[in-house]
Amino acid sequence: MTTIYDADILLVDDNPDLLALVADNLHTAGYKTVRTASSCADAKTAFARRPELMILDINLPDGDGFGLFRDLHAGSDVPALFLSARDADADRLFGLGLGADDYLTKPFLMQELLLRVQHILQRAYRAELCRPRTVAMGSVTVDLQDAAVHRAEGTAALTATERAILQKLADERGHIVTYDALCEAVWGADYYGYENSLNVHIRHLREKIEADPGRPQWLVTVRGIGYKLAGEM
Image (tube, rainbow, N blue to C red):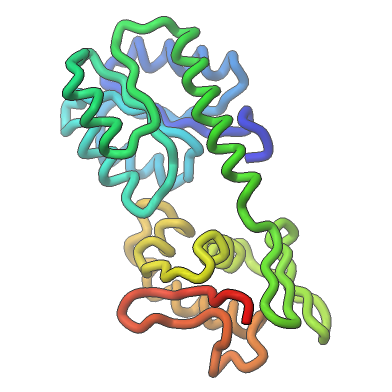
């Protein structure tokens, strides 16, 4: 997102009136929303659009928000805010313990919700600004902002998928990124079926950034686990 008001927000709540009210207030504040009333399957489909924030009700007809959060948050760092009619400390602490950023008990003041959303997105935006924008690999430099590979022979363009792969690896540079985490970062939670495609995109990416793609020095395979972008040598 360029600013916090470019954020897409996923709303999941089984109360259609509250869902509409929250969405309307978020739209008035300048945010974009994707909403679903109950289905966990629908929420996972919507999550594939890569929202910047998810607001989840705890009580859902076909599951609970805690379980849905676990599924959506696996391999993803999208922040979350729980809404719940449960005001027990145990529920609030459990939700925060799962990794959610905030927990708001119903009924709530709409202005309070908007302030909490703003604060969560501001933290996420500051973290986004700290992400690597250029990646140096010996004589090769990649501009992730422009999706361009600069090398002595000239400049090559990255596809959107190649850029997303390299961004995730650059975020975790020097550390292993598992196949699942990489697929989810690129294709979202509903990435099943893309695992084989990942290998093809990695091969094409190596052809652009490696001096010898057959013997990669930078984008290395950790067999049976995932990939790693090596640090400066």
